[in-house]
Length: 140
Image (cartoon, rainbow, N blue to C red; front, top):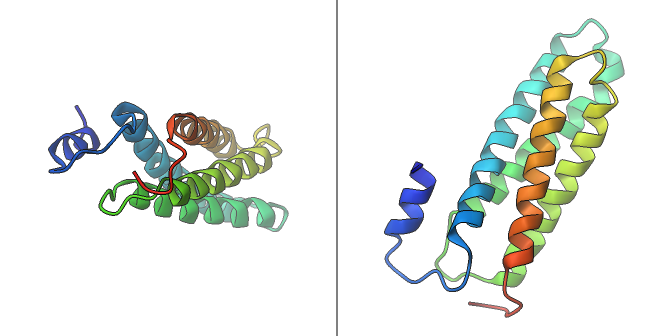
């Protein structure tokens, strides 16, 4: 059991019909992706060809910011609104896809980009998986 799961289990109110395991998996994927994207951007800055990695660095940093925000928002449950959660998850999935696509272009030359693309794909999948399980109401 992770601290994420522990916190979900100790939440004093009912979380409704949200799948706790999918939620926990998505929160973990978001924070892992944020860390990986930050590290990849930093590694790109250390490459001799840094000027050619400008878009990759920018995409990494954008993805890290979106993933941190998504993970934090998914960790809050009071006043939950499924429509806001869905929008944030869709944004995160889209940003992770863009980052993975960009990193894959450099993966042949830079191992850190290959790793980052993999982690971004996992986060994208976790976001889409959670989206598929959300209810359609405005608040649950």
